[in-house]
Image (cartoon, rainbow, N blue to C red; front, side):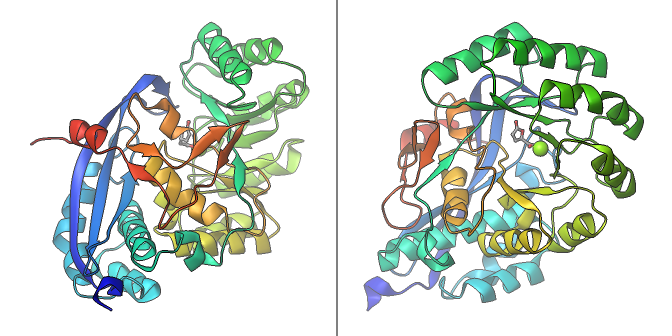
Length: 376
Ligand code: MUC
Ligand code: MG
């Protein structure tokens, strides 16, 4: 029985800085490394599970930074959980919510580590705690975000010929709108006909700019427009959605489930991007999917450039969703020079293939993890 004891013995955190293979630009920030907090949860069984809190550009994409996440887990979240059974997933979620307000990336990382550790203890995949898988692979797109069209065309061609990615997301909003559109036109012109393209403006446009460029985006055949306006501008986003021939995807505008309801009820988008960093945990992300679906929104498996650890946690949930119309974008493991996962998720034939194994089913690259650990 001791080896099946899921009581939480230790929760350990570290900040890691992982170098990316190239500069990645968004409308409001750019990165050359990805910083995460890696959580290791040790249970009485002896099993250790791993979770990851992702950030992008410091407290920039959202308000959480790795420094704050680590401090809040160490000081407030971990003490609320020590001694509790890891299997009490909902009760532990409530304990975390009582210990900290919002801090969704921090809570998601801890909950991830507990799912992984419980799975390893009971010799079950983490997806078994989430209803079980309904698919064993998920299509994965690649994001083009250097801002240099020639480089981006070459990069996309490389992904296509390696059969790694055939859909792309182009980050907009950091050049002038006219320059961004010229860049987009050039890239799309160089890709095979019917290549699926998503554009992510990351809040960079005004309603007027969006109205101006909607016809051109439609003419180019863009598949999806992600978060064109500031998250607070729901009515303006709804007006764009109403006149757009292309669906609008809600990203930063909806972190919590009440925010999904607000966006859906305002008709500010018809696709929702699911992310652990927004939902604050695996169970809550699964509920987010149910809520968005009930409003008739389609689902997209979003990322925040997680390593293989965070990607595997997302995959465990995505695999169990009745609907996932847009596949996922968990290319993060491939944009790191040294991923923190040594095996588990397999990138092959334009898909990520679900691992077979206990917990999240991945092996940690301990050398890469130690090398990337920030020493203060
Ligand atoms: C975002 O806003 O979607 C995910 C992929 C990417 O290129 O940027 C991130 C964040
Ligand atoms: Mg986005």
